[in-house]
Length: 113
Image (cartoon, rainbow, N blue to C red; front, top):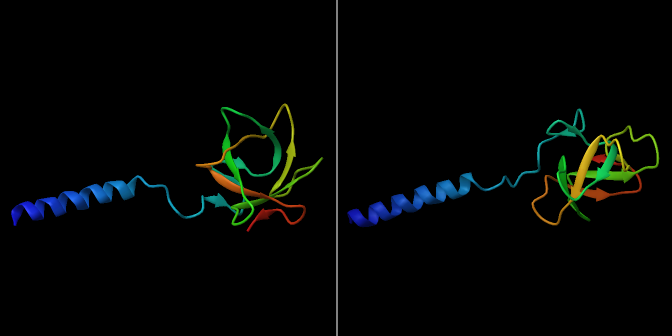
């Protein structure tokens, strides 16, 4: 009986530790007032990089954290990105798994859901 109790206790402790290390299933903490994520604005001049990004992004077709419109100039509204090769406001790496945020490209109405 005591061994069964110990086994259940160990199981519960291990399960609690496992759950505490799991990433949150909720959407990331994008600040809708400033259109930013962890201090990085989600608009402006974006440089796409393969290493050392400010932000890791996964491109999705549904359920995005933010909708992004690629523009040629004046990326001043939330979700408007202008691709540049130098002097970026934000460096972004496109990933297939474990993104910081999920992005959907749109032709109009960019921004947070």
